[in-house]
Length: 284
Image 1: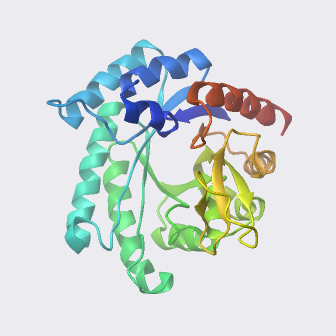
Image 2: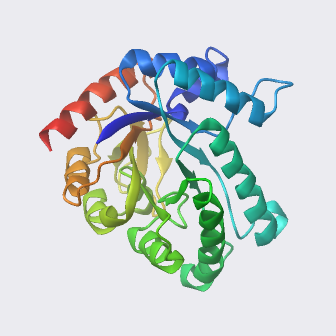
Image 3: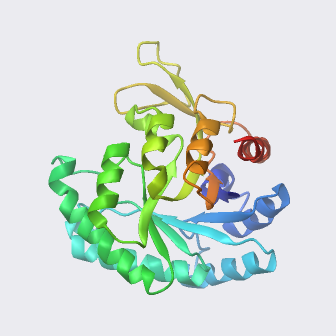
């Protein structure tokens, strides 16, 4: 199992203008990561996403830092003006950008929900995911959907989606922390979906019960109202080591990418998280 870092982990520095995605490559290499994951393409003004993806790709090759994944949003129910066909075509264009980046795997979302039950919309999103993965397979790129966004988040739902798509090029991105957003124990969920996992996100959260007073700034609510706040890997309540062991039980040999979204200083948090995750993988 190799360790990557999501460019989303640098979000505070990217948003403030202190860093660019280009800078993230060198910093990831400096910390010791084996690869980097790009979340969208944040091109400078006047530069197309395609051109900037090529710049990023060249720098990754120069630094000998592979692109482990290209991550972006999608919604096959309400995206692109509510047209599933138009959203499929938009996602295919993002697959083209992934090819420019040199990424061999992408993560796109499936749906945020539109008031119908998950089972009711499952055929729609499964067909869309299948069409995208067939397109991506021709370019040598695997596709995944993450347990993300409250609606398509529970382990039984992403398992149903995996089975409904039914294509060898399609799998799951398993996020260790995100199951808590749907109030599901991560260790139980990981044991369920590990066999279908192509890629993992290592994420930690501080968790407080909805029965307790609101802890204030920095926390957000789970689907049923529990309080969550991003944490350094190993500092929170997510059973990271347990999740790694669940992956190792099925001989997972892909990337686990740190996705940090805590309040701590970014570089310090990523360095501590990297060292902890490296140790956990060794001990699992």
